[in-house]
Image (tube, rainbow, N blue to C red; front, side, top):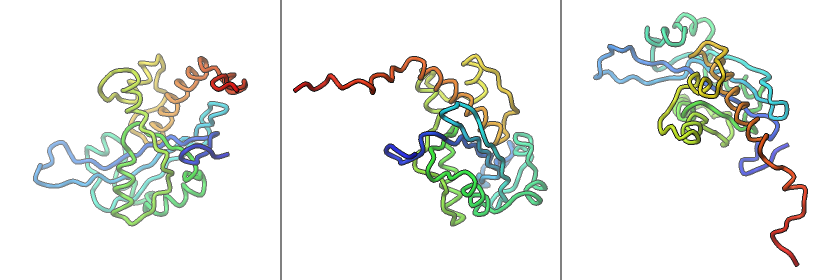
Length: 207
């Protein structure tokens, strides 16, 4: 079933996370570094059962920037891994699209990941498989809690009284943890919302 402004399904949504290349801490400032997506993780959230279903991780071959020591320290990804297991972005998106149908599902990330997708799609001449219904849940969380600043995904879980269950800075793990935050807030929203409002005739206009 699809509905709403974006014409996306109402029973499922995708939590997505990307790992990107990054420069070493001591890299000369005169040398430009172009961050590039090297891993994509996805976790599909069933909005009826409020359960995390399918999840996957995809390695993506880098073309513009190397995997630095700092990048490996953060993500565990090495150039050797990408050389052996990585695939071009176009192939990864094709496989992902066939399995998950992202074009008709809302997608959520903890941060402005859409910028990275748009940038890499543009310079690699690849069409984005995602719908227009993108939501930056990290920004929403900061605004809704009144923190006034960005906060990490694991810290957000702890604020909610939950403990992270996966290792940080792995794409599929962060996608799963993002979905857990989503489940937490959806459960609380549904606990207070009175849906009987839609079952009774409107009293706003009387003949």
